[in-house]
Structure formats: structure tokens, C-alpha cells
Image (cartoon, rainbow over all chains, first blue to last red; front, side, top):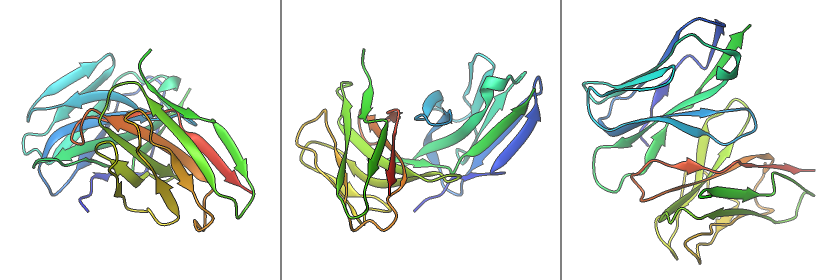
Amino acid sequence: GQQLNQSPQSMFIQEGEDVSMNCTSSSIFNTWLWYKQDPGEGPVLLIALYKAGELTSNGRLTAQFGITRKDSFLNISASIPSDVGIYFCAGQLAGANSKLTFGKGITLSVRP
Amino acid sequence: DGGITQSPKYLFRKEGQNVTLSCEQNLNHDAMYWYRQDPGQGLRLIYYSQIVNDFQKGDIAEGYSVSREKKESFPLTVTSAQKNPTAFYLCASSLRLENEQFFGPGTRLTVL
């Protein structure tokens, strides 16, 4: 099936730093989504993007839908300890009746 | 409160026993999904259902079975044929197949 590439698998940052993560594919997507999963919980939707070039913020989080429609990035500014978790990207492939494809996720650790 | 519930949060079973995990949603969503998550792994799709009385195999359906007799409910049975059933199981739902998915809190299954 189609794949979304997220790398590296893990990121380690210092509290207060900004961090950026991206999600890429060789296919074109109609929708890009970013989820965060806290340890032992289900993923929670952070930001949804529906249009190429769209830039959307949610508090300290900003995400963009790439112009080529093949990528998206998520930026977290001024990180805090509760930002720890797994960040998944997901996309809906161009074409009708297509379910979401998920990336493998990036585990973020924040050092106090 | 609208949402997705999974019960129980923790489940223990002896090897060789079938076990059924519950997933209920009151969001009036047509589509529902089951994922398996292993430590350090992404989300792997087990089964999904677009509408009542219909379901499709995902990437790792062997050893699992589902039913969709009601719109609100999508139970997953982990059978004794599943060789390595210990994992974290996540249920999700979406308005339609191509829309953003919302996740339940997960069930951690341990087979002893």
C-alpha cells in the first residue's frame, strides 16, 4: 500500500526548543492530518489540513500542507514536558473512497 | 458527551482462549476501524467497516474477526489462531471512509 514516511523514529529536544517534523510521500494527498499519542492512550487529532499550501495553527503547533500535495510538516514551538509523545501524520490519498494512510510516527522526548 | 469508548482498558487472557474487545461510538459515524500497536511500532490496520453489516480485512487480519451489526458497535475478537496477541488495540471511527478518524482510549491485551 501507499506509505507515508516519517523520520527519524525518535527525537530528543531540550525544553523550550522548537522542533519540526515532516511527513513525505511519493503520492498526492487530498488531506493531511497530525495526531499526538500520549503513552497508554489513543491518538488525538491535533491539526487537519485540507488545501495545498494551507498553514494552520493550534496554540504552539503549526502545520502546513505542502504545495506539491506530497508532504506536510508540523512545528512545535517553545516545547514543554507535556509535548512528550508519539506524533503521527496521516493522509487521505487523492481519489474517491480512500481511507487514511498513517505514518509510523515520531517519538518525541523533551528534556527538562 | 460524544465519543468512542473501548472496554476494558486492560485485559488478561490465557493462551488458547478467544477474547472480544468492545468498541462503541455515539458520533453517528459510518466507518469504524481496528488497529494494533506494538511497542515502538506504528498503527497496523486489522479490520475496517464502511457501513453496517459490511467489513473489510486490513493489513493484518489473520487470527482476528469482527462484526458490525449496529452502527454504534464494532467488536473485535482475538482468536486462538492469532500467534502473538499481546498488544495495544485501538478502535477508531470516522464520518465516512475518507474523513479524519477519531480514536478510542485503547485496550491493552496481555495473553499469559
